[in-house]
Picture (cartoon, rainbow, N blue to C red):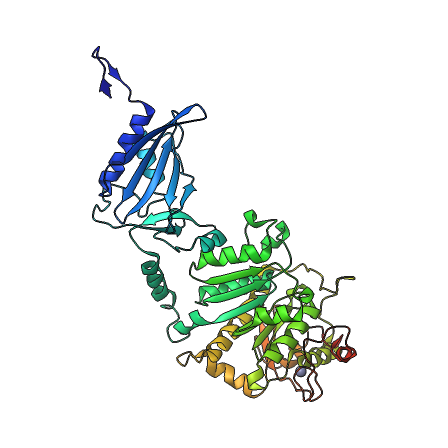
Length: 472
Ligand SMILES: [Zn+2]
């Protein structure tokens, strides 16, 4: 309050209130008093304050005569010198002074309070409101992840190193930090692909590319990692944002594309330098296409697929440098099992050739997904030569004997399992087997006379590749 010439108390003008409140913030953070300028824009008188924090880094606050009922416009100076707007959370029921302090806490980390250090030096970048520190100084990466401009006494580099140390603290001896250098390409971002991507990134995978042509529908939410606000968005883009929210330092890129519709050279480019490719599509043709490209490029691959109703499923690993048979060669194993014990494969959608979407429990699909994730982690440790990882011993034994076909049941007495475990007590659901696959010397993918994957459907040589496998 101030006192006017007649001795009565008067309420400071909105602009003076803002100046007083920002000056208080400046004092708390060891900054110089704000620079003040008044402008008239479209007939409105505006007060502009530039607050420069030690660093230096600046933010602008612009208030109309509606302050403090209306929030000031806030613009934060980025690492590139550009000022970007930030919407301030505005709780008008609080005192106007507290309201501004709390709102600026969404921009300046740590939250402003009486304990805030006046010794701090600040840098600017991008991050999440309410979360500590800066996550990046790259505006493009911030836009990809949906992060907003922020100012913090802790640099993005410092926070990344802290997070890196914590990331592997619970997997010491099981995995290795070199996993951060590994790159995985996941084709198919549905229930299997989205969950598997998140599992790998949570475990420390550093680079990931995800590919899917579809958009998210409400029916997808029951068994994927997506949320309601993702509906209508491309699965690949939403998954990238999800993965960056889980592990902000992952390098992730998404492609809204049907792998089967891409030119061969573009497929090669997408999988180039990958340590592992995961085929998690519901399109057998796409799985077979990946098999051809990955085997020709010498890239290990894992192919996952659920049986009808997710009562069971399979994980097939193909490792060219271990000279395992390929996905095409694994198909006869399923054919033989189905001939003996009944069909478990899903029907194809007439027209698209894709497998029909099935009614199934998310937990059953997740069961298969976690199997696939463990195989993927083992293959990554092998690929990156992470010698301290215990997973590779288990994997080497399977690869040496071509036991590359993992099949699992999620229900009691499913398929051929009762015959295998007939004399073993206590056998109900969640049975699994690793089956050996015989290589075919005549296989055009992994045999003696391989066909170049760049040949497309018009080539008569590809007749041998069609219809031979249903894929996973
Ligand atoms: Zn083969």
